[in-house]
Length: 551
Figure 1 (spheres, rainbow, N blue to C red):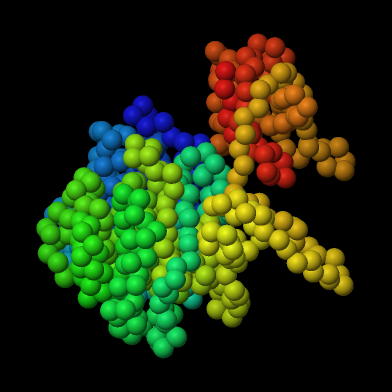
Figure 2: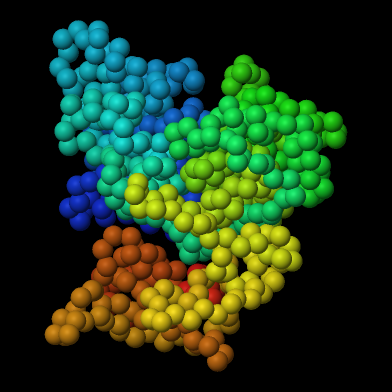
């Protein structure tokens, strides 16, 4: 493995979860779900390299839908594994490779290539047709693969299955759900979530550890009225929606608010509705003297490319886009997002907000401000707890948000403290005739503190059933005594997969030799371990969690 990148704990967990899934004998098509900005491309690259180091004759294809993601994923693989046998099949990137052991391709280029090869078949055996025999198919942004059997993705999968019926398909996404389907594992092609850190607690932990930037969503005075807009395919009708949004008074009022609340923000990204509205919004912002330009599908590719280059180089204050930059666009300094693009799709909503979740320490970014002119937060929920669509017939419900009466920032409906200003919310007590089964409180934003360590104790910890039989391998219970408080963590040396690897890494932090193979042997040598000077603890959890240790 290359030493250029040191995988983060969750990137290693995600990678190992795929191996664990198949090692347990499961035969479905699993999905890895990670929030935007947490480095799926690193997981994909490390997974591919590990596959080839263990099974050198594998043939892999990685599919996605936009050239930017193909390019980003390919660059990450080459940076981690410079000698990777990689080819690219993407019209947008002007490359048509089909024979390399690893192919990174665009679905709109790969599907026609297969059709063309089948039409001009020269009698070659099936395993040598088009892209040939493939052992693994990875799909980035796999939420775009719907249950329809006539889609381009489905066509590619079916043709590859004809050559290799044992083809394994693995998906990666930040939004593991779809409108009209619910979770992407509720019917359709994918069967299981083998790894998911898109839930509230995981998202909050990633913020607490600095891997994600907080998003602050404020209600705006200007709000787009969509009451007269019809629906097409489950979302707002595009033509009617642009007519409702692209009105002089709405655009003028929204831009005035942007100038008022985001004057101290350095890197703007504005989502508009339709091409005309994109140009309109950009023109009004320019009238205030800001260097902001539009990008959209009617502009030549070289114009869009140059504008995005200038934006990333810091030569522009902002970019106005419709749907073009919702996925596959990575620019960490973004610290302000203005949304004039109402939607009923939680996937689109979360993907848009994900443009602002990447940390940018070099620019001093503390968070990303979100101006919700589209009322999407109220409609679809906050970034770390969106309203996930239900399967047809399973009903819906209101999004769980409440607005802080002090600063106007949206919070989860059950939050006790505002994530922005610290205002403590009050609750009305409800009395029910039967006992409730839900937890009385959900965790708020993570609270992390450092504690000086005075003493560390190591003990055997076992889980047994009623007959006294071990249900899991034995563990080491590590207790850190910090003044009048004590915090515990459990070291799982004998556990399989990533849990065991993480335990061995824990040991190597504290010892200059590899961990013993058993818990019993490790307990005999705990006196050799160095004790940390202090620990970093996530304290507002039911069981406080040790995040890291310092010496």
